[in-house]
Length: 150
Image (cartoon, rainbow, N blue to C red):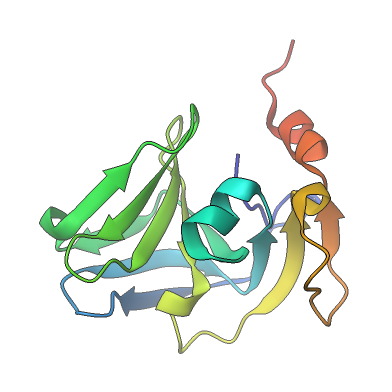
């Protein structure tokens, strides 16, 4: 599961991007950082970061320098989350099956992105709303989209 910029059937425009945690112990480089990103409103993402996770679905072409400074938390059957052991910066949400990374957009201040998608919209609290129009999916719709063929 994850925040996908591809579910509308089109491949997003991408750029290469690099960023780091607050203390600089970990640097992340994404070969294909999409310029359209998503927000996840699931309870786990909101619990992890205190609000929705704004992330870019960067695929598997991600290079991490300083991997020894990362702790990984097994957050569900299908995904894990990484953070810096020193400063606590949230570094990634990674799909276990294909090792695809969803990277928090705040790590990449130089990238001009557009919020295009929201997932788990059915779990979003009433207390906030994004200003622009986005594609929205419930948790059930997202699970159905990525379910293995039966």
